[in-house]
Image (tube, rainbow, N blue to C red; front, side, top):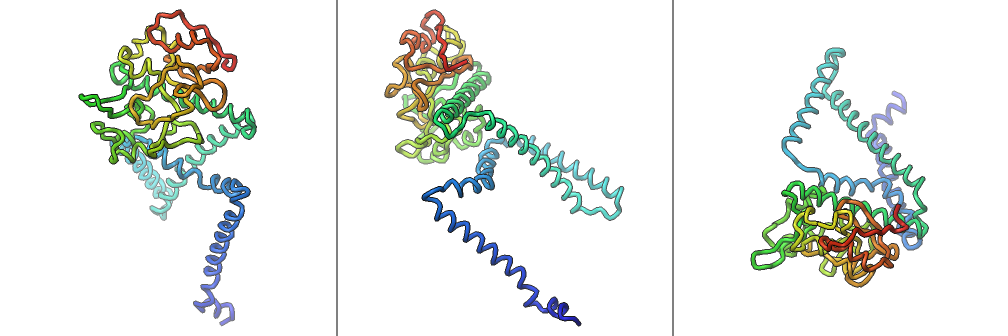
Length: 354
């Protein structure tokens, strides 16, 4: 017997290599942690960037999975389709190779799913790379303002689309705040349209008969809803710890006694403000009567305004988005605020909008 064979048959010596591998893994983890702690005060982004690239998909996947409607029939059809495909693949494998095994079928099916997922991810990476190549430099003030304004525009369009979808399923009625028969507030209009913006997971947890700010409702209203908040805003919680929104409705339209449906907007949907940016006194998104009067002026306390310039963005009743300067003619702003004012169509075009 050679010395190599003796070493191979000696359990103590044979196990040294795997143990050394574990030791190196532990050392590598310790070095990364120490490196991160040392650099955090002077450049935490050096550590944050690689970790975000490697594991940033985890919270996104958790949020996305939570927004997928869990319909029993759809799940059953998906499971049946995958099972039928796997069975057909296995039978085909046995036909052409007598030693084909179940684990080979499982491996092929898993590989197909992985390849499909990777292809979708690569498409997303390509879109983001193209956007970054043509976008303004985000590290420059003008670039940040452009990004924040674009993020606000996307949110406003999604909220308005949710309202439209809500109305289509409720005989044309707009989402409204709810109250008890004695007038006690229950839920806000943003809560009522959660299913229409893809947050059925939150809506299913609600107790609609109870007030929104009761303790048993906290898991819902402590949750930040991306469509209701600007990305990376400095304010994400109110004084009670509830997740806030950075948008409010035109109080002359939403929750107004004389406007129940979009058809009640007599001045024209394209000439009437529906929802807009706010820049102070951010309310919890679940709070009833989240509305403000645009006619009081822009960037004034308790009114509409934005953090990125001297005006604000609004989505109109027809879904179009307009940027309004705080120097807008007060009469034009009032005309855009009233749904049934019988004013002539407001002829206003902000130079910042195409």
